[in-house]
Image (tube, rainbow, N blue to C red):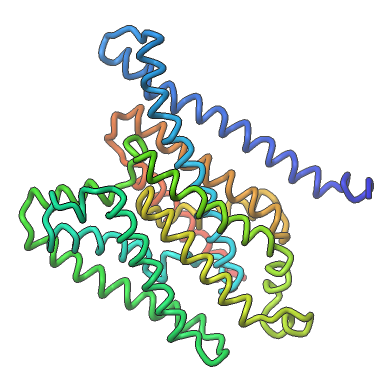
Length: 336
């Protein structure tokens, strides 16, 4: 047992995870500094202890939301890549991001920007998350029926659905008035600084259940990564596990996206970066490594955004790096 724990691979994994924790701590300090002393210095003010504590009261739920949402997106992205057997795909391809933006747009277009359906955070969150989960379940029930493994068709249908919803959303945004459009834009942008604590308290237990359920099944994912035939030969009920993971992915993506906003490439970037630095195919260390990578990326990106006074949104930074990395992965896969 002791010999297994001191294997060079395990030492490397522990060293990488420790380094990631240290980098997250540094990024957290930078984020707190950017929200407090950096803003005070920019305005020529002195940061008093009372003002610092007041700001920290808003920073704490923002940090918790970033950590929880990043971990969920990383875990479900790794699970999704395993069941579709591709490193360049993301759960967003099923249409979560498009449905999120489309739901916010329809709420404003139909009921108005100042209606209870849009302004009440509880109602808005319940509708947005509910629509995404319901749409995902309908897709799964119709496409993955009769014990058929139609994951490729599911991805194709998700891409078509994203295009249709995206086109309809853009049309509604064009014909609505400018004030309503700004409300939609503000609601769909990633903003952790003004997150509703009560909504977060509702989302955290759900996200914890999703992450815990996927982590508990990590050994089954190790076998499923070998392929459907090999997994069945080793006693894994592949179709049932496929449905369970897709349901967990749908719930996790829906709850996290409705809470913090659309982060298309965060999970994809974090999972592939974790694969590169950990050099392992075991899902348990990859889950932890991907989660830490995602947390580091989001916290550091948010800190940079604060230092730049919001000139560059965090989604732009993540999408730029994510798109570049995907391009590299596609070229790498094409060579092999």
